[in-house]
Image: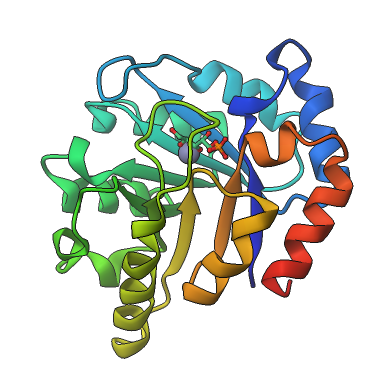
Amino acid sequence: MKKIAPSILSADLARLADEVKDVIQAGADWIHVDVMDGHFVPNITIGPVVIKALKKVVSIPLDVHLMIENADLYLDAFIEAGADILTVQAEACTHLHRTVHAIKDKGIKAGVALNPATPLESLAYILPDLDLVMIMTVNPGFGGQEFIPAMLPKIERLKGSIAKQKLNCEIEVDGGIKVANIGEVARRGGDIFVAGSGIFGARDRKETITKMRREIGA
Ligand code: DX5
Ligand code: ZN
């Protein structure tokens, strides 16, 4: 089933609980949490303590996107804090196979994110083990960046290889998703759509999510 995951990076963080409740009421399927360490990406955001606090007020899955180095050191902390899905960046994990299985062994879903310049081929030997692949459609680090259209054929090719191998792996698309482009991204093969500024920055969030759903046929 297609899903919409608002990214709290664009929420009013001083009112985080209310902001999250607002998008859940507006129809969000997952809450996307962007964790940045100031090393892998040039920005610093939030960590397990905030996720633990969020977990108390959020009834839907917490989709945690780790844009950090040394992810292995922090997996347990994020899982204990309440992450339902943990996605690591391929570029930041030297022993990606070990990291993915460390997540799965804890009984939650594991994803791998690919930066725009990282080829799909880097996942060839791990794809069957993944619950999701996250195609980055911006260079990670900040909300509100422009969608990179050259990622559309990448999504399409990934969809093809998942279908060919009959895998149970979803495609999440993250960066620059708006009402105007979400339909095209869905047609190319996207299953889960992250939107930060496109939802939290909208005048009417409920109307925006409803329009997005219509565009993706969900
Ligand atoms: C990018 C983050 C995204 C970002 C999406 O570094 O991983 O999740 O918050 O924000 P928008 O939708 O504004 O591009
Ligand atoms: Zn993200």
